Length: 128
Image (tube, rainbow, N blue to C red; front, side, top):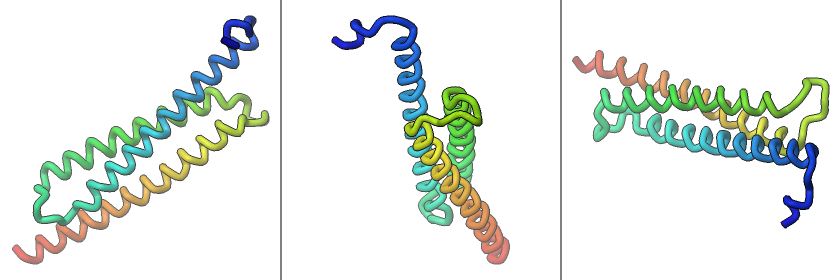
Protein backbone atom coordinates (compact mmCIF):
# COMPACT_ATOMS: atom_id res chain seq x y z
CA UNK A 1 0.00 0.00 0.00
CA UNK A 2 0.87 3.64 0.45
CA UNK A 3 3.00 3.04 3.56
CA UNK A 4 5.71 1.21 1.60
CA UNK A 5 5.86 4.05 -0.95
CA UNK A 6 6.48 6.71 1.71
CA UNK A 7 10.02 6.02 2.81
CA UNK A 8 12.36 8.25 4.74
CA UNK A 9 12.50 9.77 8.22
CA UNK A 10 9.42 11.96 7.68
CA UNK A 11 7.03 9.04 7.36
CA UNK A 12 8.82 7.16 10.15
CA UNK A 13 8.28 10.01 12.58
CA UNK A 14 4.68 10.43 11.36
CA UNK A 15 4.14 6.71 11.98
CA UNK A 16 5.73 6.98 15.44
CA UNK A 17 3.50 9.96 16.26
CA UNK A 18 0.41 8.10 15.06
CA UNK A 19 1.33 5.06 17.18
CA UNK A 20 1.90 7.30 20.21
CA UNK A 21 -1.44 9.01 19.52
CA UNK A 22 -3.19 5.64 19.32
CA UNK A 23 -1.55 4.61 22.61
CA UNK A 24 -2.76 7.81 24.25
CA UNK A 25 -6.24 7.31 22.86
CA UNK A 26 -6.34 3.81 24.36
CA UNK A 27 -5.04 5.07 27.72
CA UNK A 28 -7.66 7.82 27.90
CA UNK A 29 -10.41 5.33 26.93
CA UNK A 30 -9.18 2.85 29.55
CA UNK A 31 -9.13 5.60 32.16
CA UNK A 32 -12.67 6.57 31.18
CA UNK A 33 -13.74 2.94 31.70
CA UNK A 34 -11.96 2.88 35.07
CA UNK A 35 -13.83 6.04 36.13
CA UNK A 36 -17.11 4.35 35.16
CA UNK A 37 -16.18 1.28 37.24
CA UNK A 38 -15.33 3.50 40.20
CA UNK A 39 -18.63 5.35 39.78
CA UNK A 40 -20.53 2.03 39.89
CA UNK A 41 -18.78 1.17 43.17
CA UNK A 42 -19.56 4.60 44.63
CA UNK A 43 -23.22 4.16 43.70
CA UNK A 44 -23.30 0.89 45.66
CA UNK A 45 -22.11 2.54 48.91
CA UNK A 46 -24.86 2.04 51.47
CA UNK A 47 -26.45 -0.81 49.52
CA UNK A 48 -27.30 -3.51 52.08
CA UNK A 49 -26.44 -6.33 49.66
CA UNK A 50 -22.84 -5.11 49.32
CA UNK A 51 -20.44 -6.09 52.09
CA UNK A 52 -18.40 -3.21 53.44
CA UNK A 53 -14.88 -4.75 53.50
CA UNK A 54 -15.11 -5.97 49.89
CA UNK A 55 -16.54 -2.63 48.76
CA UNK A 56 -13.73 -0.74 50.53
CA UNK A 57 -11.16 -3.03 48.89
CA UNK A 58 -12.81 -2.56 45.50
CA UNK A 59 -12.92 1.21 45.89
CA UNK A 60 -9.28 1.33 46.95
CA UNK A 61 -8.08 -0.94 44.13
CA UNK A 62 -10.08 0.91 41.47
CA UNK A 63 -9.05 4.32 42.80
CA UNK A 64 -5.35 3.36 42.86
CA UNK A 65 -5.53 1.90 39.35
CA UNK A 66 -7.37 4.97 38.08
CA UNK A 67 -4.74 7.34 39.48
CA UNK A 68 -1.97 5.30 37.85
CA UNK A 69 -3.81 5.34 34.51
CA UNK A 70 -4.42 9.09 34.67
CA UNK A 71 -0.73 9.75 35.36
CA UNK A 72 0.33 7.43 32.57
CA UNK A 73 -2.06 9.06 30.08
CA UNK A 74 -0.90 12.55 31.07
CA UNK A 75 2.80 11.60 30.78
CA UNK A 76 2.28 10.05 27.33
CA UNK A 77 0.31 13.08 26.12
CA UNK A 78 2.97 15.45 27.47
CA UNK A 79 5.68 13.44 25.70
CA UNK A 80 4.04 13.76 22.28
CA UNK A 81 2.60 17.27 22.55
CA UNK A 82 5.93 18.96 21.83
CA UNK A 83 7.22 22.30 23.18
CA UNK A 84 4.86 24.31 25.38
CA UNK A 85 4.94 27.36 23.12
CA UNK A 86 4.43 25.28 19.98
CA UNK A 87 1.19 24.42 18.26
CA UNK A 88 -0.55 21.31 19.61
CA UNK A 89 -1.94 18.73 17.18
CA UNK A 90 -5.79 18.91 17.28
CA UNK A 91 -6.07 15.22 18.16
CA UNK A 92 -3.69 15.64 21.11
CA UNK A 93 -5.68 18.68 22.22
CA UNK A 94 -8.90 16.64 22.04
CA UNK A 95 -7.33 13.88 24.14
CA UNK A 96 -6.17 16.41 26.75
CA UNK A 97 -9.74 17.72 26.99
CA UNK A 98 -11.13 14.18 27.31
CA UNK A 99 -8.59 13.36 30.00
CA UNK A 100 -9.45 16.59 31.86
CA UNK A 101 -13.18 15.76 31.75
CA UNK A 102 -12.52 12.23 33.04
CA UNK A 103 -10.34 13.64 35.83
CA UNK A 104 -13.06 16.08 36.87
CA UNK A 105 -15.62 13.27 36.97
CA UNK A 106 -13.17 11.07 38.88
CA UNK A 107 -12.51 13.78 41.46
CA UNK A 108 -16.26 14.30 41.90
CA UNK A 109 -16.79 10.56 42.44
CA UNK A 110 -13.95 10.43 45.00
CA UNK A 111 -15.47 13.34 46.93
CA UNK A 112 -18.88 11.68 46.73
CA UNK A 113 -17.43 8.43 48.13
CA UNK A 114 -15.86 10.30 51.07
CA UNK A 115 -19.19 11.98 51.87
CA UNK A 116 -21.21 8.75 51.51
CA UNK A 117 -18.78 6.64 53.53
CA UNK A 118 -18.62 9.34 56.20
CA UNK A 119 -22.39 9.61 56.53
CA UNK A 120 -22.68 5.81 56.56
CA UNK A 121 -20.23 5.57 59.47
CA UNK A 122 -22.08 8.37 61.25
CA UNK A 123 -25.42 6.55 60.91
CA UNK A 124 -23.91 3.22 62.00
CA UNK A 125 -22.46 4.85 65.14
CA UNK A 126 -25.87 6.32 65.87
CA UNK A 127 -27.58 2.92 65.76
CA UNK A 128 -25.02 1.07 67.90
